[in-house]
Length: 188
Image 1 (spheres, rainbow, N blue to C red):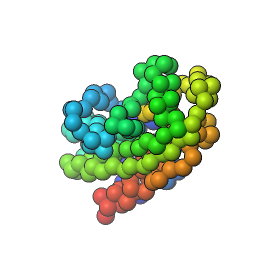
Image 2: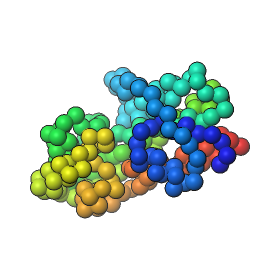
Image 3: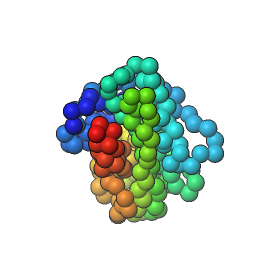
Image 4: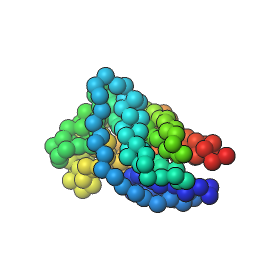
């Protein structure tokens, strides 16, 4: 893919996924308010925030594609974003333990004045985790930059996730197959 791409994300996981896809990009970061209106579904929240991130580039790019994304975790009607503290991270993982939750990643591709918005959804099945496993993970990995307080590619994901329905890379933070197809469509 020869098109210039801006990844508007500091996530090392998203950067690594794009590298693995052999997509050239540069990282440009902007501060964006990630609040959202009440009453949105989890998918709508993820797309709304991803779109806000792309809108921050509205006046600045011409021939580049801006790729933004936002990942959220939802369980029992509750949205789990990034934890605010150690205690909050432990509480989130205890809530996820032994249950099924959903991971939504909203993506926005901004190109030539157009916003191409989409999302992906995956179901994640956690086995029952012990408090010791949860506390050890939070203290060692400090998952404060991760929705739901965990990284699927880290120890808690490796020992705790029984199965996934949907895209693994969506749970990591970027639904690569959908992103690739949409990028191809944009540059044709």
